[in-house]
Amino acid sequence: MLGSLEENMNESIYHYCKEFIESTENPQFAIFIKGEWGTGKTHFVNKLVESFSNDDSIVKSSEIIYISLFGICSQTEIDTKIFQAIHPILSSKGMQLAGTIVRTALKIGANFDINSDGKSDGSISFGGLPTGKSDIKLSGINKKLIIVDDFERAFLDPGQIFGYFSEIVNQSDCKVIFVGNEEQIAKEDEKIKDKFNKIKEKTIGLEFQIEPDVSNALDCFLSEIPISSDSSKEIKDIVLEVINILECNNLRTIRQSIFNLRILINGIDEKIKDEHKQDIIRIFLALYIQKSLGLLTTKDTVDDAIIAFLKYRINIVKYIEKLKDEKSNYFYSFYDRYVPLSHCWKNIIFEGNYDEEYLTSEYKVENTINSKEEPKNLFILLNTWRELNKEQFMQLISIIDTEMDEGKYIHPGEILHYFNIMAIYSKWKLIPKNIDEIASRVLGIIERQKKNIIPIDDWGVLSMSYGGWGYSEGIPETAEIKKALIEVTKENVEALTEIQIDQDIDIMKDDIREFCKGIIHVNGNSKYYRKPFLKLADIDKFFGEMSSLSIADQEMIVYALEERYGKKYSNGEVYLEYRDDLSNLIKLAQKYRDNIGSIEYNPIELMKNNIADSLDSLVEYFKERSRT
Image (cartoon, rainbow, N blue to C red):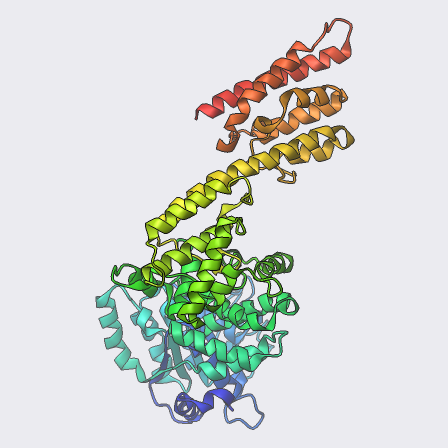
């Protein structure tokens, strides 16, 4: 029986189709099963065919053939499709049919001369072609049903398709059921669509609209793709919630999202706290489904999509429309709750990065920041402000203001959070200061605490959130605060990098290969990637240590510098961050040149001269590339 589909509105369609197929009379019309892509048409047809698999079935499953019209351009190709479905062995290379053979054979038995020797090689009935000479007799196989799927995906004119099958419908005992998305047929050409509808009336007796049976389909999907967490009922409820908000009835998309959810959850299930699992499942499904439906693209901000779904329960397209309304508070949207894996979602959804180590590492960092053992008052405020009365709220604000002045919050993400939430409180009249006053105060704190502010390399991870909490880019002053923080952290990064470079120069002779890995990009360790290595190096010390190495090791260093600045590649470039290295590169080349002795009868000095030439060449290359 049909099982889960019998429990919904498609039950009557199922029973009618069964009676239609089992009828011994020729109704002289076909059925059209239609519905949007992904609504379960193919699933419905598969269940229908399965119902004829019992030995006592009036129609046997072997008497049913299925073909897809996907990409079909001619009636001859339909011949081939039917031929392949009837007898796949005989559809091998060399066994080709002329245009009308199959169509005729479906109506009557026919003799065929396959090898063109003028003699009959056997006969074809509804059951297929002979495999050899006429001594191989094929018993007639009376096919009772042809299912023609993907009607709208054919490149053939719809009228030609109906014309092809009209002979079968009217002149044989074979029933025909068409399956397709009628809305996509000649979507951009109303004339073709009108023609299709007129011709359809002569061939199609009944049309049925398949409606997606989401609930029971989910049971099937979850049983097919088990998730390690023992929470199938919980997951089903979340899926139903998500697709209801997103108005998604595409079962194919839903199934794909559950399949990929399994990959995500099974990798991190044991590493994630139970209270965060529902949000991870909810966010993944909301983002993945919107991406699959074309609502969310790489041009959109994943963070906005999360805000739209979690805070406003709408899709990203509707959210962007809301942002255009100046009267709307959407302009001041921000995460008002912790969002697990906040830095990872773009990589998960658009790059398919489900790496367990990467995800659990990011999750661990977030939970350290939001530690319940030693929580910072700023994050207590983020978690609890909606539940505070006036006295509790203002007392906590006062404590955090004092802590800001004392330098307790020195991570750029914390400073951005402080400004953002205070700016929003100002907008909502929860605190007396205006946004200009708050921005001025924060900029003053940044200036006073600039030597203590924690340096960070990658500002991309702070684009919209920190520690799983977001802040609004919709507040114009945020850009000013961020710019000041970037300048301060750049100085602090360079100060730390300078110390690290000095330490590495001290020990370069202990492991020259590891030292060079820090310089190069390809097969390197990215230690000094996009950092001005030579600018920050003590060039006198660097030259002194380098000149004490063997010639082979010195050549390795020059090679590493050539690779770093792109000279080893035909399309090489000097990154903007490296342009300030030129001054010290010139000094290094000059020092090396000045330190070369006579090369006459002296192989070592000859090799040093070659190294000096390489450094001079690198300088000229650097100058040329820096001009572009």
